[in-house]
Image 1 (cartoon, rainbow, N blue to C red):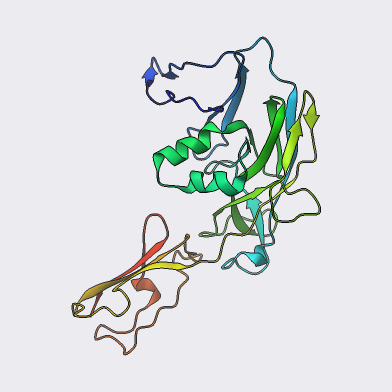
Image 2: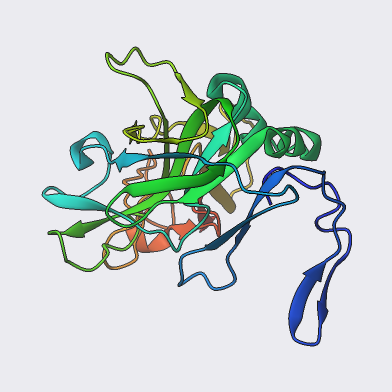
Length: 275
C-alpha cells in the first residue's frame, strides 16, 4: 500500500475467504493498494482516499526497453518484451532521488527497505506495450522510477526464450539526458510524456569463489562453486551458459556443462565431487 502503512502485515489474516488487514490510515491522504496473488496475472491496483475527493493529478508516459544487443547473453535477433505478471513490474513515484532511494530498496536491512517504502507516493502498472499511468497523485514534485521484468523472444510474437528473464530499472531523465533523475512537477491535472528508459543490467561479476584464491590443503574430493552478482543465463535446454575449465585436468575428467548445478536464485554455480 502506498503511502506505506507500518501495520499492514501486523494484522493480516483470512476471514471468510477474504484477505483482511486492519489499518490505521492518515486523514486526508490518497492511497494506492497494490496486490498480486497469481504470478501468471498482472497485479491489481486500487486507489482510494481518506479525504473528501481523490487528487486530480496523474503521471503517464512510455517505458522504453534497451536494445537486446546491450544485454549480455541474449540470442542474436531476439526482441525484449515486458511481462507485467512477474515480480513488481510498476512505475513508482517517490520523494527521494533514486541515487539514494534505490540502494535502500536493494538492502537486506529491513529498516532500509521500510525507509524506501515510506517515501513512495504513487504506483501504476506497466502494460505490455510499455505505457503506464499513475493516477490519484497529490500535488508536489516527485521522481518517476520504473521496475520491469522483461524476457527475450524470437520475433515480436514468439514464445519466451528460457533463461532470458531480467528485472530492469530506469528513471525519468528529461531530455537532453544526463544520466541523472529529474523531478516531475504535479499539480491538479494530468502530466503526460514522462517517458522512462530501462537501463541494461550492470556487468556480471564474480563475488565469491570456492575454493578461495590461493587456498591450501583443499580436499581431494571437493565442490567448486562460483557466486555471481546477478542471475546466470541458461540455454533453451536448461543448461548453464558457462565454459569452465580446470587445469591440470582433474582425475574425474574435465568439467562438462551437465556437471554444473545452478542455485535457486540463479546466481551460484556448483560443481560437486570434483576429484
